[in-house]
Length: 269
Figure 1 (tube, rainbow, N blue to C red):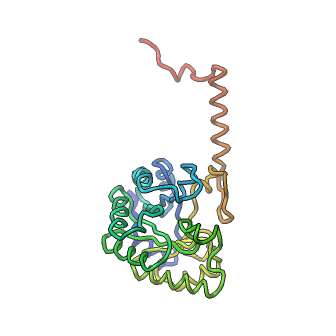
Figure 2 (cartoon, helix red, strand yellow):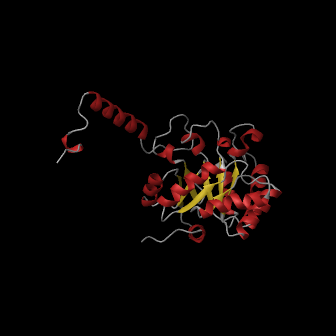
Protein backbone atom coordinates (compact mmCIF):
# COMPACT_ATOMS: atom_id res chain seq x y z
CA UNK A 1 0.00 0.00 0.00
CA UNK A 2 1.30 3.45 -0.93
CA UNK A 3 2.08 5.80 1.93
CA UNK A 4 -0.57 8.48 2.49
CA UNK A 5 0.52 12.02 1.70
CA UNK A 6 0.13 14.43 4.62
CA UNK A 7 0.79 18.10 5.27
CA UNK A 8 4.22 17.02 6.54
CA UNK A 9 4.93 15.33 3.21
CA UNK A 10 4.06 18.56 1.42
CA UNK A 11 6.38 20.58 3.65
CA UNK A 12 9.17 18.06 3.09
CA UNK A 13 8.78 18.52 -0.65
CA UNK A 14 9.59 22.21 -0.24
CA UNK A 15 12.40 21.57 2.22
CA UNK A 16 13.99 19.17 -0.28
CA UNK A 17 13.30 21.39 -3.32
CA UNK A 18 10.99 18.78 -4.82
CA UNK A 19 8.06 19.88 -6.96
CA UNK A 20 4.59 18.44 -6.36
CA UNK A 21 1.33 18.32 -8.30
CA UNK A 22 -2.28 19.31 -7.62
CA UNK A 23 -5.37 18.48 -9.69
CA UNK A 24 -9.06 18.99 -9.04
CA UNK A 25 -11.54 16.12 -8.87
CA UNK A 26 -15.28 16.12 -8.29
CA UNK A 27 -16.26 12.44 -8.37
CA UNK A 28 -15.11 9.04 -7.13
CA UNK A 29 -13.74 7.60 -10.38
CA UNK A 30 -11.80 10.71 -11.42
CA UNK A 31 -10.29 10.98 -7.94
CA UNK A 32 -9.35 7.28 -8.07
CA UNK A 33 -7.66 7.59 -11.46
CA UNK A 34 -5.62 10.74 -10.76
CA UNK A 35 -4.66 9.28 -7.39
CA UNK A 36 -3.35 6.17 -9.17
CA UNK A 37 -1.49 8.48 -11.57
CA UNK A 38 0.55 9.83 -8.66
CA UNK A 39 -0.96 13.30 -8.20
CA UNK A 40 0.04 14.55 -4.75
CA UNK A 41 -2.96 16.71 -3.81
CA UNK A 42 -6.53 16.22 -5.00
CA UNK A 43 -8.53 19.43 -4.65
CA UNK A 44 -12.30 19.44 -4.61
CA UNK A 45 -12.29 22.90 -6.16
CA UNK A 46 -15.28 25.19 -6.07
CA UNK A 47 -14.55 25.41 -9.82
CA UNK A 48 -16.94 22.45 -9.97
CA UNK A 49 -19.69 25.06 -9.76
CA UNK A 50 -18.92 25.90 -13.38
CA UNK A 51 -17.36 22.80 -14.92
CA UNK A 52 -19.59 20.20 -13.25
CA UNK A 53 -22.80 22.04 -12.38
CA UNK A 54 -22.96 24.68 -15.11
CA UNK A 55 -23.13 27.76 -12.86
CA UNK A 56 -21.70 31.02 -14.15
CA UNK A 57 -19.38 31.66 -11.17
CA UNK A 58 -18.11 29.88 -8.07
CA UNK A 59 -20.47 32.00 -5.93
CA UNK A 60 -23.40 29.73 -6.70
CA UNK A 61 -22.23 26.58 -4.94
CA UNK A 62 -22.94 25.99 -1.26
CA UNK A 63 -21.78 23.85 1.65
CA UNK A 64 -24.36 21.08 1.13
CA UNK A 65 -23.22 20.52 -2.45
CA UNK A 66 -19.54 20.55 -1.48
CA UNK A 67 -20.26 17.88 1.14
CA UNK A 68 -21.52 15.51 -1.56
CA UNK A 69 -18.47 15.96 -3.77
CA UNK A 70 -16.05 15.82 -0.83
CA UNK A 71 -17.43 12.48 0.31
CA UNK A 72 -17.19 11.02 -3.21
CA UNK A 73 -13.65 12.23 -3.88
CA UNK A 74 -12.39 11.14 -0.46
CA UNK A 75 -13.54 7.59 -1.23
CA UNK A 76 -11.54 7.58 -4.47
CA UNK A 77 -8.27 9.22 -3.41
CA UNK A 78 -6.42 6.91 -1.03
CA UNK A 79 -2.83 8.17 -1.37
CA UNK A 80 -3.18 11.87 -2.25
CA UNK A 81 -3.88 14.62 0.26
CA UNK A 82 -7.56 15.54 -0.18
CA UNK A 83 -8.38 19.25 0.15
CA UNK A 84 -11.88 20.76 0.03
CA UNK A 85 -12.29 24.28 -1.34
CA UNK A 86 -14.63 26.01 1.10
CA UNK A 87 -17.39 27.75 -0.87
CA UNK A 88 -18.47 31.39 -0.82
CA UNK A 89 -19.79 32.59 2.57
CA UNK A 90 -19.13 29.22 4.26
CA UNK A 91 -16.47 30.72 6.54
CA UNK A 92 -17.10 34.46 6.37
CA UNK A 93 -19.98 35.14 8.77
CA UNK A 94 -18.50 34.03 12.11
CA UNK A 95 -15.67 31.85 13.35
CA UNK A 96 -17.92 29.25 14.99
CA UNK A 97 -19.80 28.49 11.77
CA UNK A 98 -16.50 28.52 9.85
CA UNK A 99 -15.07 25.83 12.14
CA UNK A 100 -18.25 23.77 11.96
CA UNK A 101 -18.47 23.96 8.15
CA UNK A 102 -14.79 23.15 7.67
CA UNK A 103 -14.92 20.43 10.30
CA UNK A 104 -17.79 18.78 8.46
CA UNK A 105 -15.57 18.42 5.37
CA UNK A 106 -12.89 16.73 7.48
CA UNK A 107 -15.51 14.43 8.97
CA UNK A 108 -16.55 13.43 5.44
CA UNK A 109 -13.01 12.49 4.44
CA UNK A 110 -11.09 15.63 3.47
CA UNK A 111 -7.61 16.00 4.96
CA UNK A 112 -7.57 19.81 4.76
CA UNK A 113 -9.59 22.81 3.58
CA UNK A 114 -8.78 25.79 1.36
CA UNK A 115 -9.89 29.32 2.18
CA UNK A 116 -9.47 32.41 0.02
CA UNK A 117 -8.35 35.94 0.67
CA UNK A 118 -6.85 37.97 3.47
CA UNK A 119 -8.21 40.09 6.32
CA UNK A 120 -7.82 40.20 10.07
CA UNK A 121 -10.88 37.98 10.23
CA UNK A 122 -9.44 35.42 7.78
CA UNK A 123 -6.28 35.28 9.88
CA UNK A 124 -8.37 34.49 12.95
CA UNK A 125 -10.28 31.83 11.03
CA UNK A 126 -7.01 30.22 9.93
CA UNK A 127 -5.73 30.22 13.51
CA UNK A 128 -8.91 28.72 14.90
CA UNK A 129 -9.07 26.05 12.21
CA UNK A 130 -5.48 24.92 12.68
CA UNK A 131 -5.80 24.86 16.47
CA UNK A 132 -8.95 22.78 15.98
CA UNK A 133 -7.04 20.18 13.98
CA UNK A 134 -8.13 21.36 10.53
CA UNK A 135 -5.17 21.99 8.16
CA UNK A 136 -5.56 25.15 6.05
CA UNK A 137 -4.45 25.85 2.49
CA UNK A 138 -4.47 29.62 1.93
CA UNK A 139 -5.17 31.38 -1.40
CA UNK A 140 -3.93 34.84 -2.47
CA UNK A 141 -3.51 36.79 -5.70
CA UNK A 142 -6.64 36.55 -7.80
CA UNK A 143 -9.30 35.06 -5.55
CA UNK A 144 -12.44 34.03 -7.50
CA UNK A 145 -14.77 34.43 -4.51
CA UNK A 146 -13.79 38.12 -4.47
CA UNK A 147 -14.43 38.49 -8.21
CA UNK A 148 -16.88 41.36 -7.78
CA UNK A 149 -14.71 43.40 -5.40
CA UNK A 150 -11.62 42.82 -7.54
CA UNK A 151 -13.49 44.14 -10.57
CA UNK A 152 -13.11 41.06 -12.77
CA UNK A 153 -10.49 38.50 -13.74
CA UNK A 154 -7.39 40.64 -13.20
CA UNK A 155 -3.75 39.76 -12.61
CA UNK A 156 -2.64 40.62 -9.07
CA UNK A 157 0.78 41.68 -7.77
CA UNK A 158 1.82 43.54 -10.91
CA UNK A 159 4.08 46.03 -9.09
CA UNK A 160 6.80 45.73 -6.46
CA UNK A 161 4.52 47.35 -3.90
CA UNK A 162 1.65 44.99 -4.68
CA UNK A 163 3.99 42.00 -4.52
CA UNK A 164 5.31 43.10 -1.13
CA UNK A 165 1.72 43.39 0.09
CA UNK A 166 0.91 39.84 -1.02
CA UNK A 167 4.07 38.60 0.70
CA UNK A 168 3.09 40.42 3.89
CA UNK A 169 -0.33 38.79 3.79
CA UNK A 170 1.21 35.40 3.00
CA UNK A 171 3.55 35.58 5.99
CA UNK A 172 0.64 36.36 8.29
CA UNK A 173 -1.27 33.37 6.94
CA UNK A 174 1.85 31.25 7.38
CA UNK A 175 2.14 32.44 10.99
CA UNK A 176 -1.55 31.66 11.49
CA UNK A 177 -0.83 28.03 10.65
CA UNK A 178 -1.53 27.65 6.92
CA UNK A 179 0.43 24.69 5.55
CA UNK A 180 0.51 25.93 1.94
CA UNK A 181 -0.49 28.87 -0.26
CA UNK A 182 -2.12 29.02 -3.68
CA UNK A 183 -0.98 32.00 -5.77
CA UNK A 184 -3.40 32.63 -8.62
CA UNK A 185 -2.79 34.89 -11.65
CA UNK A 186 0.35 36.50 -10.23
CA UNK A 187 3.34 37.49 -12.41
CA UNK A 188 6.01 34.80 -12.40
CA UNK A 189 8.65 37.11 -10.96
CA UNK A 190 6.34 38.11 -8.11
CA UNK A 191 5.47 34.50 -7.36
CA UNK A 192 9.17 33.56 -7.34
CA UNK A 193 9.95 36.33 -4.86
CA UNK A 194 7.06 35.32 -2.59
CA UNK A 195 7.99 31.62 -2.79
CA UNK A 196 11.61 32.32 -1.84
CA UNK A 197 10.52 34.30 1.21
CA UNK A 198 8.05 31.81 2.69
CA UNK A 199 8.69 28.70 4.74
CA UNK A 200 5.50 26.99 3.54
CA UNK A 201 5.15 25.75 -0.06
CA UNK A 202 3.42 27.80 -2.75
CA UNK A 203 1.13 26.38 -5.41
CA UNK A 204 0.96 28.13 -8.77
CA UNK A 205 -2.37 28.64 -10.48
CA UNK A 206 -1.20 30.73 -13.39
CA UNK A 207 1.72 32.10 -11.35
CA UNK A 208 4.63 30.70 -13.31
CA UNK A 209 7.13 27.89 -12.83
CA UNK A 210 8.99 28.97 -9.71
CA UNK A 211 6.33 27.98 -7.17
CA UNK A 212 6.76 24.72 -5.32
CA UNK A 213 3.74 23.13 -7.03
CA UNK A 214 1.30 23.55 -9.90
CA UNK A 215 -2.48 23.20 -9.83
CA UNK A 216 -4.92 22.92 -12.72
CA UNK A 217 -8.59 22.09 -13.11
CA UNK A 218 -8.76 18.47 -14.26
CA UNK A 219 -11.48 19.21 -16.82
CA UNK A 220 -9.05 21.63 -18.51
CA UNK A 221 -6.22 19.06 -18.42
CA UNK A 222 -8.42 16.31 -19.84
CA UNK A 223 -10.01 18.55 -22.49
CA UNK A 224 -13.49 17.92 -21.13
CA UNK A 225 -14.64 21.48 -20.37
CA UNK A 226 -14.72 23.73 -23.43
CA UNK A 227 -16.74 26.81 -22.39
CA UNK A 228 -13.59 28.65 -21.32
CA UNK A 229 -9.85 27.86 -21.19
CA UNK A 230 -7.53 29.96 -18.99
CA UNK A 231 -4.28 31.11 -20.57
CA UNK A 232 -2.27 29.15 -18.01
CA UNK A 233 -4.12 25.83 -18.50
CA UNK A 234 -2.58 23.10 -20.65
CA UNK A 235 -4.80 20.60 -22.45
CA UNK A 236 -3.35 17.07 -22.30
CA UNK A 237 -6.30 15.21 -23.77
CA UNK A 238 -9.52 15.59 -25.75
CA UNK A 239 -12.26 14.02 -23.66
CA UNK A 240 -14.87 16.26 -25.27
CA UNK A 241 -14.33 14.64 -28.66
CA UNK A 242 -14.05 11.17 -27.12
CA UNK A 243 -17.37 11.55 -25.27
CA UNK A 244 -19.17 12.93 -28.32
CA UNK A 245 -17.77 10.18 -30.58
CA UNK A 246 -18.74 7.39 -28.15
CA UNK A 247 -22.23 8.83 -27.70
CA UNK A 248 -22.66 9.10 -31.49
CA UNK A 249 -21.58 5.48 -32.00
CA UNK A 250 -23.98 4.29 -29.30
CA UNK A 251 -26.80 6.33 -30.81
CA UNK A 252 -26.15 4.88 -34.27
CA UNK A 253 -25.86 1.30 -32.96
CA UNK A 254 -29.16 1.58 -31.11
CA UNK A 255 -31.01 3.02 -34.08
CA UNK A 256 -29.50 0.50 -36.52
CA UNK A 257 -30.11 -2.50 -34.30
CA UNK A 258 -26.42 -3.21 -33.63
CA UNK A 259 -26.81 -2.79 -29.85
CA UNK A 260 -27.25 -5.01 -27.94
CA UNK A 261 -25.63 -8.04 -29.53
CA UNK A 262 -25.94 -11.70 -28.48
CA UNK A 263 -23.22 -11.35 -25.83
CA UNK A 264 -25.01 -8.41 -24.20
CA UNK A 265 -28.43 -9.95 -23.54
CA UNK A 266 -29.95 -12.60 -21.24
CA UNK A 267 -31.96 -15.65 -22.41
CA UNK A 268 -34.57 -17.84 -20.78
CA UNK A 269 -33.23 -21.17 -19.51
